[in-house]
Length: 202
Image (tube, rainbow, N blue to C red; front, side, top):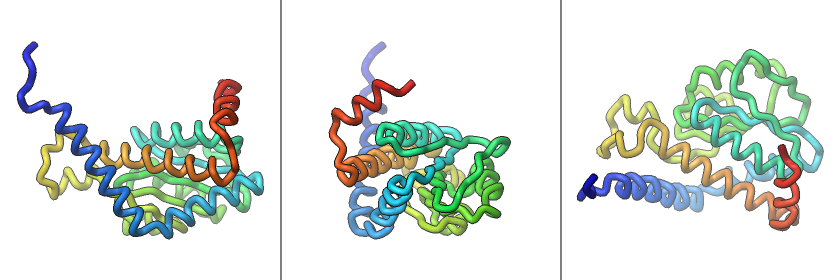
């Protein structure tokens, strides 16, 4: 196989890294919600409340990575990916929702099943005005191509370079790793502490 002069893989990687930089710049200018986001998680953790992470598809994978890191910090955390079996929330527990479009059907169904428990909902989405955004107590907006963008053909770049929600999902993964770094600092943990927790996990 010969080399591709277009270097499609590099163009795709550049699109993704450019989007991450755009999000860094955006969050730097709009950091109040990010600080609140971390404050809520820290408060819940210090009070031994539970964090419930919700996502579907590739966003679910991002949520599971975040769940793992929270476990390494000894934060009580559960991941929910369907509405057939949702654990009960107690007062002070936190529901963290990851949805680029803010209208993912299964995620919406999970939130609806919790509304009568009056949960504290934090969402990460590209569309704060969406149903999921409107149902949330706090929204962190991340910029990135979503299914909605592709359907409307609002973007000029070839969708095949970053299919569907790729840009959002990777931005969300990077953002949540940044949140973990902030929590590590706030909890005065070391890398050795995290490694010890990692080696004990199954």
